[in-house]
Image 1 (cartoon, rainbow, N blue to C red):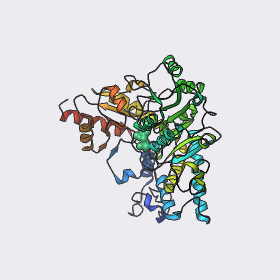
Image 2 (tube, protein in one colour; image 1 turned 120 degrees about the vertical axis):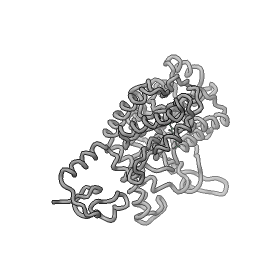
Image 3 (cartoon, protein in one colour; image 1 turned 90 degrees about the vertical axis):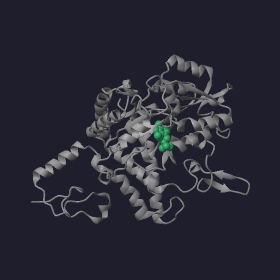
Length: 460
Ligand code: PMP
């Protein structure tokens, strides 16, 4: 009888090269498995969707991870890419004349092109690497409000004589609020907000939205496609159209949408898209701003220093074109390799990711909806991904989080960097459980019984 390796699914001994990324191999334990058991393992694997790609669960057996909206776990392919750069290459890019450096440069540029294509269909789309969504918005807030940027030719609203304004919504993450507040104060812009309704949807009629564009010279519209609090996928089509009609820059915060609905991000044809690699199964410390190269080239610099200059003299310097213009200093190269692997992973598994999201959402909607708790945004139904902010009446969100942790269930508790939205809900904080491709219906059941335990402790 032939024995198979459960971790590499091939015959013969597991190679040492890949051992770092595998769980214990039964071959080394000397077990020989009959065919029916192999079938059961294979069937179990199919049922678990992509879960077996995530070594986290071998390192943390029994743990229910429900915090993917904060950061996603990393699949083996991503860990291998990080390892490949750090172990086998580990050299700097762009400035090296030797072959290894040129090879690393080629890889980074390939990932750059892949990143732009993942979220944009524009032929001249370019990805500028930043630390994450937060830095992406700091870059845009600085450069788009700078008098040094030459934006009139691309966006006629910048030629308007009316006082300039920036349109945001009450549902935004602080990363898409605070940088604009600082820039508005510095540059004399007015901030205008779309209201969030009781469910957290951006609740504005097209007539109201049109009136806003008539009343103000809105130069910049910056909105998140998907809420990190409720999982709601906002319908931004009408606002996007108005922004185009009035010549405003349209920016999408795709921190959550890049994972759950990348096609919807593309369909909006935004002028800039911002996202973080770590929510897309890659590493912390990296994200991207995707926009058209000619627009980037017309923009004022953001951070300055090495790697972004053409000529340096005593009093001043000239700068390179985008993307180098916006990437001063050494880039997080290993993390860029990892992002390339993550985009391959989500592209190859797009269908399974979507189906798992839907399956979990339907199941968790039913189970959570049947409890006597407040679940924010649940009524949005299919226009959501399985991200659940909830409140157990009379129990503080932090207590809920702590008591769930006692049962090995990881959730988040707090304002989720969305204080304006919390205020519109009339709460200071919520508990949030967010599901991803490695979660199962069993995880939903564990959450439900965990909530039952919290209620019992608090006698609710
Ligand atoms: N926007 C949204 C919608 C988010 O969910 C997050 C992360 N929670 C951010 C922005 C900020 O992302 P980062 O912390 O990676 O910069």
